Image (tube, rainbow, N blue to C red; front, side, top):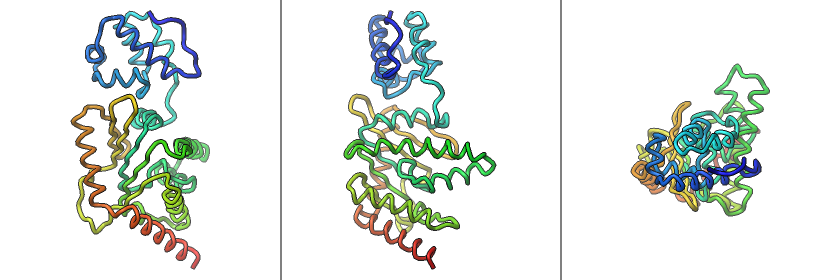
Length: 276
């Protein structure tokens, strides 16, 4: 049985390592444990390396299956995620990824949003929410962008539908500022951005947003999102299909250089119109 309670300063990695030890001691493969937990063997592997969080529900089942006397139940208490349930696992994986590739059909991706832009988005979706609630949502979203403070890791490659550039509200300055923020990150060589123009016509990702995540020591994941819903995938066939979809998007999008020019010229247009 695993030892004492874990150091709370690094619970994810330590708990995953303890899961691997307990599983191997029980003579079970990742696939065998996954079958009993009703998840894939890859999912178990991701918990062991910390890519996925061991939830309280899974922790209780792990204790019962591996006979670990409540160890995992006691030590999985990272609390409720500050993100919506459908996005919580993806947000946790995003923070550990070495490469993120994302297609955004309607909104600027959360990692690239400015405070003013995020506030408008949340207010539009929560018209009766209190100011405190909106503040909390904005704070949590901006906190995700902290991973861009590293000058090289993770690689972030975004494909934006042209609709993202054109969805402007009454205050055009908000979108202009948001587009300038993206352009500045591109010019600082921190991110890669392409725009898929309206003239490209129908494309492979008309169904919604896609996020691909790659890791140093775990299989890749993909995340598909709709209105208030989202699913994180680890099965190779689905991840491979989403990867092909993303590759087709980049092939139909403007080049990074032309995309940057379009983003900056669009921002300039909004700034000029607002000033006028």
